[in-house]
Length: 496
Image (cartoon, rainbow, N blue to C red):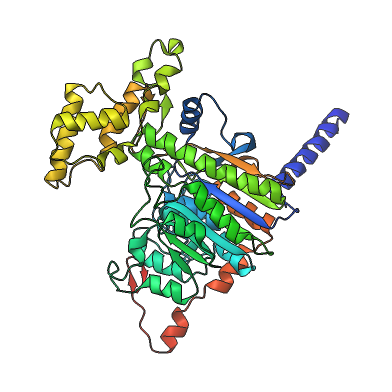
C-alpha cells in the first residue's frame, strides 16, 4: 500500500471511530436534577423579534445555545405537539395526536417500521422513570395540564383530544407538583363519567389550589394548582390576583421538588407562544416569550447555585413562519429602521385575545375602535379593517361556526402588517429549532439532533432506564384477561 494512502486510511479509521464514539456519547457525569423548559411553537423569528422588542437585549437562554433539533414526527415532516412532546418524553417518534404511545406508522426516512403488535403501545416517559427512581416530579404549563405537551410526559393515549381520560391518568400518576390550567377536566359536573377527581386528589394527600396567593402560601408536600377552567390567559392579559406568572409557578415547583435529596425532574411549558403564533398575533408571541424567558432565568439561577442540575430549553416545533420583513419590504428592506418593526408592538397593553374580553359585540363601532386603539395600539384602522372587525363580532352574536377562532386571528395580522412582520401560515412549520443546554459539568448535547435524542440524553445524565421503566409499568393484559373469559373489543382509540 502506498505510504501516504496508508496514513490516510489510518486517519480515516480514527476519525470514523471518533464519530461513532461521539454519536454514542455516554455522558458519564450524572446529575440529580433536570429542568426541561419547552417554549411551545417558538421559532427563531419569534426570539429575534423579542430581542428587538426589548432593545436588542439578550434572552436568558441565548448563551446556552448548542445545537438544532429536528422536529418531524413518525410519518410527517411537520409535527403536531402530541408526537413532538412524546419524542421528548419517551425517546420514540409518534403519530399526530398520539400521547405517550408508539405510532402505527413510522415511514419517515431513517425510521424503523413499527413491529406488528406494537402499534399504540404505551412506553414509559422520562417523568415516570424518574419517579420510579425515587425522584420527585412536576409539571408546569400555561395551557391545560391535560394539553398535548404536559400530557405526553404524564399519560398514555392515542388521542390528545380525550382530555378527560388524560386528566384521570395524571391524577393517579404520582406527580408531586402540577400547576397550570384545565380545571374543567377534573370536575365531576364537567366529566362524562361524573368522577370527582378533585376529591380524589385530596384523598391522596394533595393540596389543591385555585389562585396565585393560595399557591404561594401552600405548604402541602404535594400540590395541584388549577388556575383556569381551560388554558390560562396570555401573560399580558392575566389577572395577577388569580393566575400566577409562569416564573412564579416555576419557582414554586422548584421550591417543592428540590426538597427531595434523591433529586427531581420538572417540565415547564410556555404553552401559549404557540397559540399566539397560530393566530399570527405578534403581541402574544413576544409577550409570552418574555414570560417564558423569566421562567428560564429562574431555572438557571437555581441550577447555577445548586451545581447538580441540568437545564434544557427546546421548542417542540416551529409555528407560523414569523419573519422580520414581509412583502411590503421587498424593496427598501435595508433602509427600514428598527422602530419600523417594533414601535406599534410596544403600544399594545393586551393581546388581541385580552382586548376581545373588553368588548361587548353590541357596542357601537366607535367604542370598539376606541378600545382597540387604547389597549392594542392600533388607532388608524382602515375602512376595510373596521369591516373585518365588525363582521367578526356579528358572527359572534350569530354564533356562526365559520367565524375566526378569536379576535386575535383578526387583529393579529393587522398588527403584523403595521410592523412589517410576515407570517406564512396559521399552522406549525417543519424547520429545526434551537437547542439550549446548561450543564454544571459541561456535558451538553450538541449539534443537529433528533427530538428523541433529548429523551435519551436526559435518561443518561439522570442515570435512568426507560426500557426497564416501560417493562415495569406496562404489561400486555390481553391473554391473561381472555384466559379468564373476558372479551376484548378494540375501539377507535384503543381497547375498551
